[in-house]
Length: 217
Image 1 (cartoon, rainbow, N blue to C red):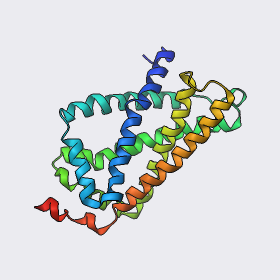
Image 2: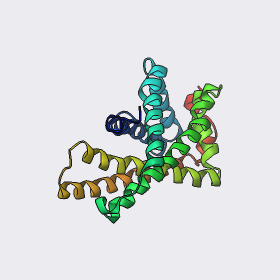
Image 3: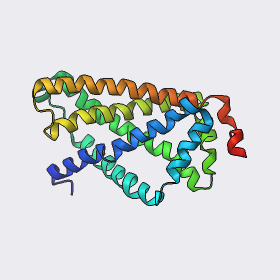
């Protein structure tokens, strides 16, 4: 399948935006609810998501299968890709290199995060305990640093990937449009990284060590 590089790369690029990119943004908004609404607000968002019709099917078809393809093909690209300074210039060549590095880091981080959270629910962790689980993770200094690295890698991979997506799909075709797009997505990278790290920091709050009183009742 990978031999047909044109269609494989197009599918890889598209899935990085729809639905994987959307999933990242949704994950950001859900986690950021811990900043705005505390433990109770966070659980309200989690319960709403898990209350969607056919949520398991939506996860498998809408998230995990596209994410698996994007990740596996992305690893293949990272393994086979070669930097080309002559074609892309120094800055864009470095972005190309960082895109591959952050892709590998993001793959490892997502797998680890999935094991620590969603997979634990599958094994029997009550869904409403996810906030307390995040408190355990975020309160560990080593995990906190590793999560920050994973978060920044994932957001960079998404933001820089969006720049590449707009170019490869013929949306930003000229040098000026591509330069403006660079500034826009650098801004998105900074804002999303800050919001994600604020969310992670919010889970350290002692209120996440026990269930909200409203949720207990």
